Image 1 (cartoon, rainbow, N blue to C red):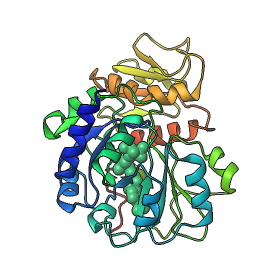
Image 2: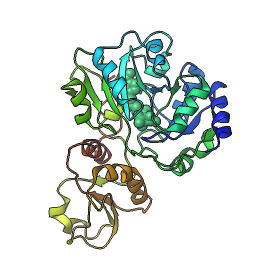
Image 3: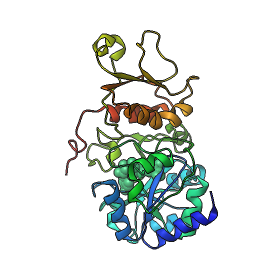
Image 4: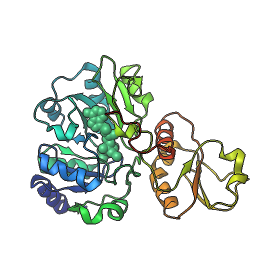
Length: 325
Ligand code: TXA
Ligand code: MG
């Protein structure tokens, strides 16, 4: 990647533009987090509801104390050990961050990505960069520049192409808005690694909480084609007259009829499966199939985030049916 191009993109961000850029997790759609007009364009481009807050990306640890009120000890430990990397931390924000970014929440989600292009872009722009994944709201996140071009190409000011993303799943989100740290979204940093540093983490949004993380909405990360995860192996006959595709974990089950198949990792490596997941779903989604049959993966390490995305992609609920205002 040409430094000149990154500089140009940084200039666009300073002037209120919206730029798609690679991170190690997925491609982001970035704007100056301190410029509400620029941030509003992100929502417009993605067709994203304003109740869905954005992650603010930084490239310098000193930015954290400028943007939040306090940093709990456990949050500080994660920052020191896991940044830059696929971890987002939710902390109480100060006034500098516009309400639009946080959907009016008193907290802000912060992340320092490890991708060199992302880091350079943020540094050069001199601003914290608000960026959701660079896909239309509710759809599968992009893991290549081409995915972004296909879906948002004519609506963004510039796309920085950094090749395929190394992790392939969105960042893990841990909130420090309560007494105990809470996992809001499993993602590219395995829960086991986080708990090895700060001890037990509460799982899932608490009962009282509104679905402040629409990544937690039942139907999300979803292709157009229906996905079925459970039970189809025992009922293959039911799919005989349908155009069915298979999203396999390690190999094509012998009993499976010939059809369109994506294998996530022939070696059964969850890291490789994570890298391939979204691109595989996109390829199957492009085939105009009646249904995508997906195999489960073991729910350890990155497998937890893979299964979370598959369950949400396969949910039949409407995007906001579970959203309590
Ligand atoms: O890996 C990633 O996190 C990518 C790259 C671009 O950094 N970004 C990403 O952003 O996945 P997005 O907007 O697609 O997902 C961010 C999630 C949303 O579900 C949002 O609701 C949640 O983070 N979120 C943001 N601010 C929050 C807050 N203050 N409290 C709770 N959840 C928050
Ligand atoms: Mg997203």
